Length: 190
Image (tube, rainbow, N blue to C red; front, side, top):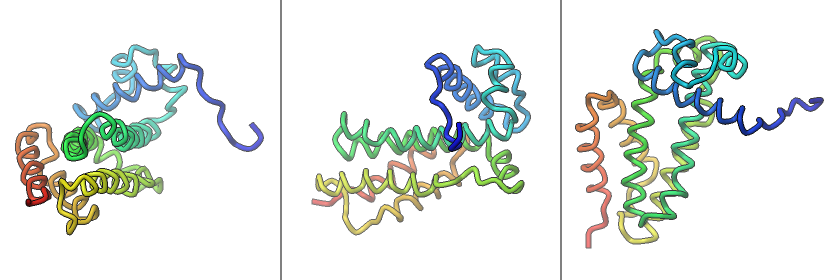
């Protein structure tokens, strides 16, 4: 296309792309940089050619996986707020945040390598996550369920701290306890 825009993917191509991204999250979380693209293709139920047509290099795949995980995490906010009271939506979202961090930890070395090579896999992820936290906290504040003297930036920093100390899958129980402690401290006192 003349203006550089890409055509939308056909439904079957989109499904294949989504299956590849989902399989890549699992494989990278398990194997990190040692993951083989052929294993990802097999896990996704697609051929290697389909994988390489969508993601010509491992770096392109890793970056796409990371951006997709951030988008899914942030896109969950309106859905959670539509089906849960605000405080419960915030609690549920923090668990999704742990899932995101756990998946990202398997790709951490690869993401650092991509960044060192000059690409920016993180793009606007911090801003997107901060906007998600802000939306959730604003909804909770409007409902009167959380303190209003704690900023979304402070909450984001608390989440980052929990992620740094408890990101591994074997530390999930500890991370959830720390989230509960943080959320308890955020709760409005009557």
